[in-house]
Amino acid sequence: KNLLSTLPRERWFGSSYLYKYNGFWLGPKGMPGLIACQNHFQARDTDFLLITTPKSGTTWLKALMFTLANRKIYPINQNHPLLKQNPHSLVPFMEFFCSPEKMNPDFSCPLGRLYSTHYPLALLPESVLNSGCKIVYLCRNIKDTFVSYWHFSKKLGAEASLEEFFDMFCEGVSLSGPVWDHVLGYWRESLEKPEKVLFLKFEALQEKPSFHLKLLAEFMGCPISPEEETCGFVDEVLGLCSFDNLSNLEVNKSGTQPTARNEMFFRKGKVGDWKNYLIGEMGERIDHITAQKFFGSGLSL
Ligand code: A3P
Image 1 (spheres, rainbow, N blue to C red):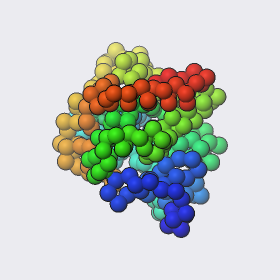
Image 2: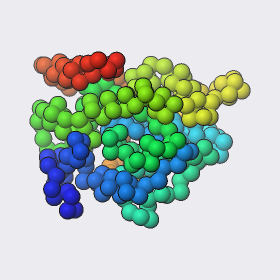
Image 3: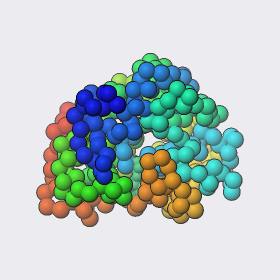
């Protein structure tokens, strides 16, 4: 609380603020978790950390990674945990490990612990970087990320207009933003340490889902075997974790998470929806910032 009162802040929604800490904007719930994790969280060599910018497909990737990692104990059938629980209940956010008793929870799967965060690279607990813990990073076209973030924030109660929200986003003021700096941090780390960081894009995942599922499984050290391929395992995972399947499950229509109702994590799941919302020069403004920020990095989104 003392730290929060010293930080620059911007109104996010309702009485909620984003706070600027070491160059990034964090929500009020993320701050205590961050300090606690930085001081106490101990990553293990066998951990998997799923990292995203908000609204770039976290829910989808959680479902895919959970299914892959747990397939020995949870074969895909009518009792699969994803049919009864939202992916966010199965793969917890590190942001909520904010008290000593919640710090190193035992949520092991056969491969190791699987958890997630929106924290940027610069703010990760040191043990994540210094251990063998593997990171899977997912990002998305920035314009689609913005549109999804806008809808989500509206559902949470944001009162600002699309234009006001857009200006803030372009200034870097968004949850875990500036989004460009978030993405670049992990992009560079993935180039330097490809064995530690797998860098994925939402659009690529949609375009070539089988290819990326296999890539993911290999990176996680649980490659899909020829027998599994023959038995149709790849299609089964993709079907189970698909937008249509998950969004129509009862648990995802009615349940809730600490941050939002489950149904709020499913909207359209499409590539290019920004065209329906960004008018005039808005799209170009984001493209311009993206080109400037990513210049020379080899990254495009
Ligand atoms: P849209 O708002 O564009 O529809 P996050 O999970 O990081 O909060 O991101 C939410 C976005 O991912 C939303 O995008 C949501 O619809 C989409 N999404 C959720 N589950 C998905 C799935 N299984 N497959 C594809 N997209 C999904």
